[in-house]
Image (cartoon, rainbow, N blue to C red; front, side, top):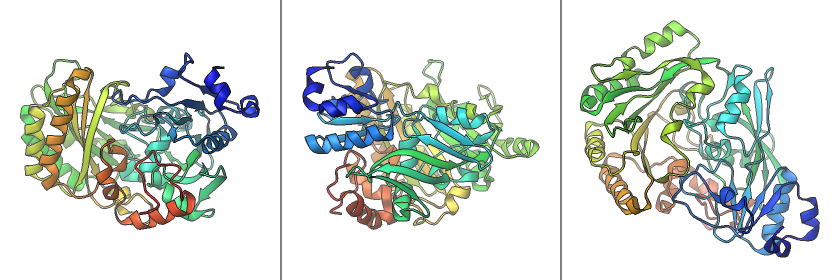
Length: 456
């Protein structure tokens, strides 16, 4: 135990705490403070690695007593780096990895440190799945609290549409249950309002029978973009709920630097022959293209993009929503992609349709319903000397796309400097969310998030 911890943590708390306190003098500190985005380099005074709900409650009380700024780390995948505080207390849920599956009720209970890889592995044993992410290393907590895009959202809605209950530690150290029947106002806010209302220590989801899916990546040389985009427009306009698709401008993962246009997809329909028919046009490739799609267990589809998001790379993203894929918007993307400075960068468009689009915008705090597309410029690089060039290119590209986008954005895609877009992320639900913030966190104790200030 370091002197700093001896001075900062009361003796009785040190004796009862089930997890571990870390300071800069501890060997494990450097790894614990790191998050997925290598551009984030913050140094908490203390890290509380929690093993139980009681640990989380104690950490909240400690922060209040010592007047420490608090950050909450679940999976640590958020590009804005809100999981880490400079000089405060990071409450780290990563050790809280419990998952319990009730296959008869088709419910899954999971703690706040679980990733989608952990979740899918546990649920998949029973042939069950819940909408959750496009990358398996993402934490369930941050993704769900922001809405939760995923491969199953056309048929089964977003992660928030599958959430049945949550347990949350509030700013005054209370443990509350939130569900449709208990604290329903808080339950509404947790389904899209981010980490603004407290620390969610566990989630209870509904799950669906999804043993295998037909999916993968179909890639084409970029010079075929015109044909691919025309076909994708037709496919997305009539896609059944079971088919969730994306369109990506990407670089050859083999490292050649070649620019490609790809159409990752997942068909979760029960009728295998129908799935083949529904995806036939999507899988047409010509010279130089590759169809890498196949039937696979559901947990596998959630890993097909993992290699494109290596932990520790420097990340800077910009994002917004499109009502439709206009030729003008796609021309801007392709022209910009031709001159992007990093071969790790991609521009990805996610199709919003089906079950997730038939929910009223005010039914959950996540407001972006209705058919359309979410795009994100995923700029990644490894050399800090290239930071300025990559950020400048991303900002220029996003500015060029503004005339073609709408004033809406998926909150989980916001970067650290996107405070001006926060109201766009919460949309028509902003005023109601401010009211909830005043009720559950009137002092803005939890402000290291895409913040809803209780002052409005």
